[in-house]
Length: 439
Ligand SMILES: Cc1ncc(COP(=O)(O)O)c(C=O)c1O
Image (cartoon, rainbow, N blue to C red; front, side, top):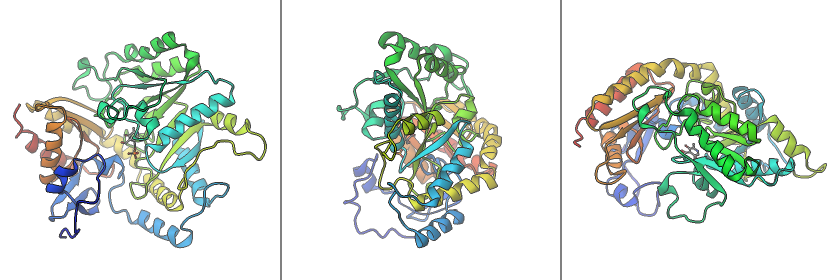
């Protein structure tokens, strides 16, 4: 299919080099299964599942049909003081996948909104339980929690913060979990887990544990390049949170819905948080949607503390639980169940990780990390941070592979439906492209 847009000028693209892109555009005009097609007719393997969200593969007819039917039946209903069946059904379905005791789901429309929503839930919960001194939030270096002001305040990627000085006060940051001793370790590193988690204990000693509302961490920091937590890290965070009455929030926007071979990262690592944020892969990318799932005790405390007939939580979006998004979500959950995709991801994981880690012999590669069907390859910086990564993302695309780079880390996350042949193809294109790089 030929490119037919009249002009590329007017659209200000997100997280993109607009000038560079518009000189040499990469437009996707078709997608099906594990592949996308560009405007010149090239077929490209989608090695990052879009942006880690198209877990069931592109073009799922069941989802398209469900959305179509929903829009024909009830295209929209106001979500405040009114409901529609789909959001209740989807919340019920999601609660089947969340850990025991996390059964209440608040819907939003992206992966950034659940972060700001979770911040407000933590505040509302502490207010309801009479712990208003808990004003501080703890997050981590190299974290990515989306682009809204709450999420940016918690994030630790410098480029996402440095021109936006007006972020939330009272955010304290722990170290990230990448350690040189754990380089090239498949799965969890053995070094430093407890020591890194003890940053939280030190913060509690410095500020007082009773001043901290919540700790936000991604089970695996995804967007920064798949930083797998070392052994013992999440367990230790959980213990410290329990000792000080601090809420533990897992931002599972990338880890959720099978990416790690289990419904959520919580189950993969055997650590149960108090709040889970989720978004990607909820609707297989077909509709914008996200959610916050909370422990029953949090829901009960907030809801029961308000007077009868009053609104309990002053928060929500015009499109919270949109009927079309719920229909897409329900169809997606059904695919996960019918095709056992979470288990499938777990079964494919060692084949996938072995193949990706085989690239360690390449001169340009400086580290590889991975867990489940998520991996990242670090490449040598070329003059300035991110220059080689950006160039590589383009080269790979024209060589037939889509991989999302953050800085100089390429993040690999094939659809959970990919077969071994497609994983071989992915690694072969990576090898051909990376071996051309000189350091
Ligand atoms: C862990 C995490 N949280 C939040 C977000 C923000 O999601 P969105 O881009 O849908 O707003 C992302 C996006 O990559 C993410 O990886």
